[in-house]
Length: 134
Image (tube, rainbow, N blue to C red):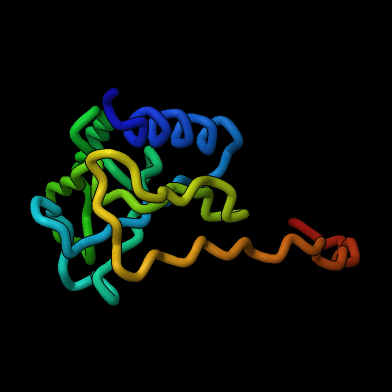
């Protein structure tokens, strides 16, 4: 059977967007074929925002993810092979999926830690204030 990872990435991306959240992809930038801005790679990994407001021409197919984006104002074409996708999750709450080993996927020596969800404690309500507008 073909790897399930590209199907899951597409589905989770759609689910995250449908819930008005920002999809982030964790990528193993050390694998062959990965084309990402090396200035933003940290410990061999990079987190990419793939929301429609952050990228153009997003394509998630059976081979990987590709899109155009600006990094520090510099335009770049990004390509991530499907085997280099380690996780996809929502920035706002960390919900998503971390991928383990499967046929056709490398087993990283140091598996990534799952993204930690942000605290969702309600902020204290601010007192209403009126302002004179002339």
